[in-house]
Length: 218
Picture 1: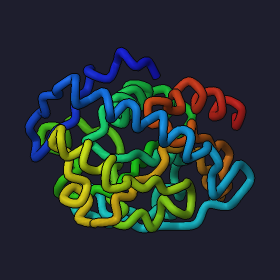
Picture 2: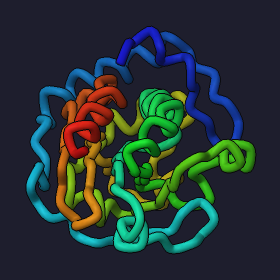
Picture 3: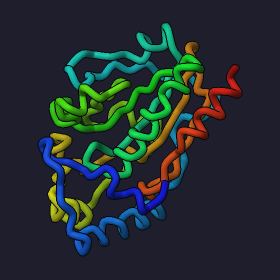
């Protein structure tokens, strides 16, 4: 994912666009390299494993289960840090743009972050949404699939300097978010694709890689 794209989708707070001070943004980008060294691309579940069922609330408060979706579709499961992260927003927009191609292979997207349901999306964003976005409070589901990244006090304070309070957004003082990862889960619960680019959150699994994996399933 190109670094120059960071400003295409700006994080928001309570539905309002945040204005970045470039001087304050620089330490945040340095954090991404530090996290890249600290957290590898290793996953809890890999290709060939069986995905456990889960049930989580979506942006409307409805409970969605993996079993329910797998009755009719393969699932592209995306773990992301939150709507406050510009790289997550860019990644989700790229995947949404490829939905028609995913649908051609009988696959639907489920995206999961630790944000509480009423903080995930604005009403305008909900109307534009073409896939399920679920809230995983405490990263209980994420920790079964991918690594969990923890913001220490200094890195959390750097986020607060640009208006992002993880404690408030996630209603948790843990400072934890998932290491971004993407999985393809087939109707029989088997994981057919599993990949993470590790803790450096600037790097993401591209939709083209997922499309190639879906083609291999046909």
